[in-house]
Length: 207
Image 1 (cartoon, rainbow, N blue to C red):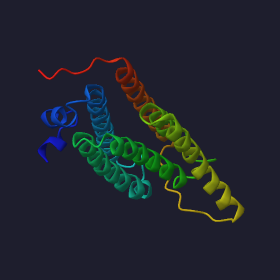
Image 2 (cartoon, rainbow, N blue to C red):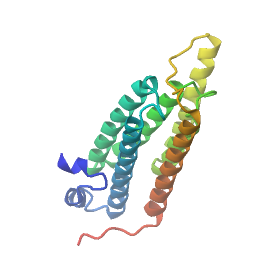
Image 3 (cartoon, rainbow, N blue to C red):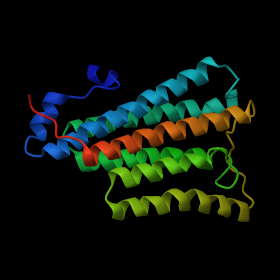
Image 4 (spheres, rainbow, N blue to C red):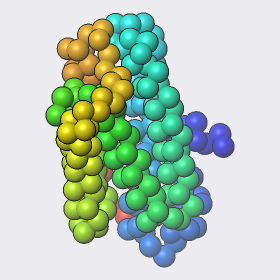
């Protein structure tokens, strides 16, 4: 378990053994493991900033939703790393896309809804991630779900005059928007970097 505390590390000997006859797949699995660990690192930094900044960014009400969500996602991403390191590349890809998609959709739904939430732009992240790591057929399905589910729920709530909990922080909306955009830009950068390396990178040697 100690290696899971290393954000940028992966079990290289085991992956060499499990992907011995599939060097390209091993390269991509290593890159996806690193991508998952980068996301873990990003979430740890965000969580630390939220906790140490008092009520400057998030008030207590918002933290009741955000901090547990961050902890759950970090734990699930660690499981995703294990899937890649144990040779379960396909499961790892779908787990990574599902975890990121689910957490982003939940953030939008529970922070004002698709049409009003400050977090709505973050949905671009799981869409780009899905098209980067999944077969195109599945990426299209994820795209429809990522946009359709929170939008449909928002419209349904409005038609039924239901007001779901809104965990949007009232402390500083401008900082929240900046935080969302920073997270989005950083995540997109890592996704595109993975895509470039996965399709144009060299096969790792066994030396």
